[in-house]
Length: 404
Ligand SMILES: Cc1ncc(COP(=O)(O)O)c(C=O)c1O
Image (cartoon, rainbow, N blue to C red; front, side, top):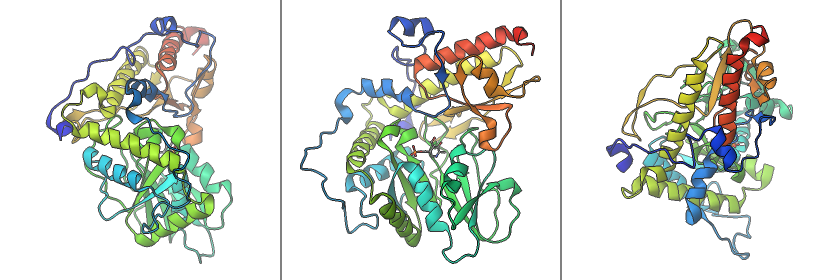
């Protein structure tokens, strides 16, 4: 594979990173110095510029007569999974080398959010007197707690920080690697008998982290939201080893939404197929490979952010070790989709400080951590990111005015 054989260098494209704010303003930006910039969600609009450049490569035309049936393939355990999507998923994992698909069943979901709930249902004992505890080490992805307890299920309930979990018996542990919000690579924490593990690998793609080995776990969750930026298509997939667990997850989705939109599946199949082709073809310019492109933008953004943060001791950021990325064929750094930023000195509420400068972030408290931390999306559009950097610089330059 070309990707692993040569160290690829991508030149910065003018339509992407590297634009300063004044340039974007000339290009018709809608943001001004009064605008609120919302970096609370991990909305992957950063990828729009790339897909605009790809033009019609991923255009999918669906005639009115196509895809009327509920069913996709009755011979498949996951009967609503479109065969083209299954093939593209397997191909893309094979060329990227980030997950083992052999001996795993593919279950498609309406985003990995639905698959997360399907996994909780499938892993919960049906005859237990008490709901099974669902745990994750702090800081954890804020939706886990909210989704787990939303319907007050009798099957499972949120058990909080995996480090503090001290109950005997069965439990479900969520392992997000790289982690949202802090970008760290993770392993299971509790490591006791009766533990059932769900690996959420939404960010285990080369633009965010070095691909060190193909992941091979019992349940692995992936999504196009973070891999290709197509969050709006709402397509996620689970790779599931155990047939009965895969069947139960499929049952959950059957009862929840009677399958998953075929239009979305066909679009995701096309996008993932084009990506797999571009990774396999030696003729593809590096800037046309979504992972190379994504990594370039992420590295430029992280470098800018580290430059600004390094100008004072007001904020700090995590450091990540370089590791050998089998996909890139060289040692690379992690450039997480979120910055897990800490306010130092005597600032107790970092989100509030930033809100005062019209920057909306998510407080560390939402992740089971403290309010000195915030999570900042690094995958917004250029103009939002550049305005964020400008404002962060201004905060530091005028920090005396804030009496901090
Ligand atoms: C760790 C993690 N898992 C899952 C999701 C949700 O993915 P989807 O859009 O496929 O529902 C997110 C979204 O931010 C995430 O950060």
